[in-house]
Image (tube, rainbow, N blue to C red):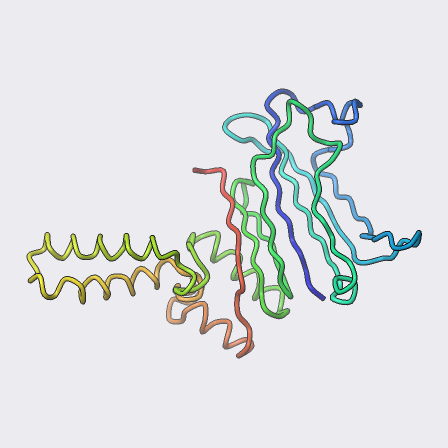
Length: 235
């Protein structure tokens, strides 16, 4: 079963009530509520069950203004996904005083979401296969605490790599290193950057003697992270 997890944050500029697109006052979104429902597709006048979803709403602030944080977990099956395409839509809940601040989703064989105490930092992690809940939570908390920029070094954008190499050469030059050694020194510093800034190569916060990649392998040799999202209201 493929899991799709969608994390949303809606910013309400005015009060906590807003007019819906349909013209009615939106009082359906209540902080602290959880809504569970079935996902269905219409096929030749027949409604076909294709999965389950759960939506939780909490009150928060964004730039010192009241906002809603909405967490949506949708679970679909591979069989249904083969025949049907689920489309993400937002309708009849967005009025002129309500704007979408953050929206992100992860599609993977297994997912987990973590919201740090204080409700201002959250991560969503995608895995290539399911694993023990605590193992998945460990990775979500790692991403929250260490703020990686990519899953692995191959996922780091080329412009970031070029920037880090230039910084490495500049620092080496300032330290008085010979010009013919600058590139080699910069490459060494780039490797350190990978260790600090890519999730799989970071030192595990619960055991700095092993990397996240090694920790996952110790649980299941084939287990790995396929993607992640990190949201913060602290910046």
